[in-house]
Amino acid sequence: MRGFAVLAAGASVWVLRARRSRHLPSLSLRAAARRLRPPRWAMWSLSAGVGGGAAGLGISNVPIIGSALAAMAATVPYVFATSRMERHRQAVTAAWPDFITLLRGQLAGGAHLPAAFVAASETCPSGLAAAVQAAATRIRAGADFVVVVHNLRIRLADPVADRVLLTLIQAHRSGSRRVSELLGMLGVSVADELRLRGAHHAAMTQQRLTALVALAAPWVLLLLTAATNPQAREAYATGPGPFIIGAGGLATALGFWLAHRTARLGQPARVFT
Image: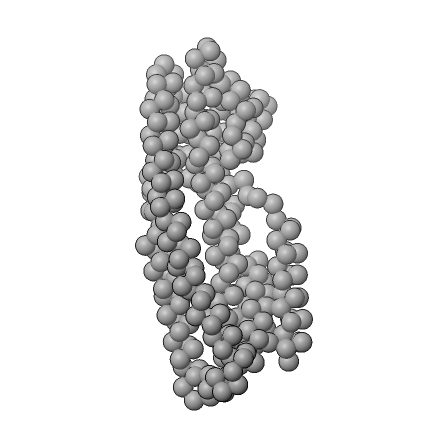
């Protein structure tokens, strides 16, 4: 039984690594969000669940413990994907102040807005580089600036991108001479928001680690107890044992959800969609 469990766990890890290697980082939040939809993530969750359940069953030799660990492991790909999408969103947002500074520098040198956008894209920060450079390529090819920037805004699907790109669209349409000043104020606003979010993230790091330890410790102790104590293994496998483990699993899921909700800093809504 334990040998089969080890083989199943190893196969699941191999499937997860193989599937992960096929995907490159997303260029937009909308594209990243599409990765969370079935059936692509069904295979990831199934593989993680099989691996976690097989490992738990192999160690404890108690089916209900293996089932509980399988259910928990099945959520890991989704949690990983949402964390990766959040990091990508933060990288995109963090790049806007630098891009605005580059754009203002080009405008101060006398370039008109489309040419300033193209020039700024050449040294754009990495979080925005791929998307902005693709838009600049279309502008160089003669595409309408407003259409290109509007499509970029749809592609990024981000509140900060809405604010910056709609400012550029309106400035280009109206021929505003104060676009550099407006972008400067917008850059200061975005930078202040980033500092606030960075301070919040740093303050919550220790709490996140503590919550993770509190979540994992009871299950590690349960596995070790079931693996080394035949009487405990028998108690958990029969009678009220399955109900206790099921209640513990529900409590763990609820605690994780509450910790995630309380530690999360809300995102600004997209007013212009």
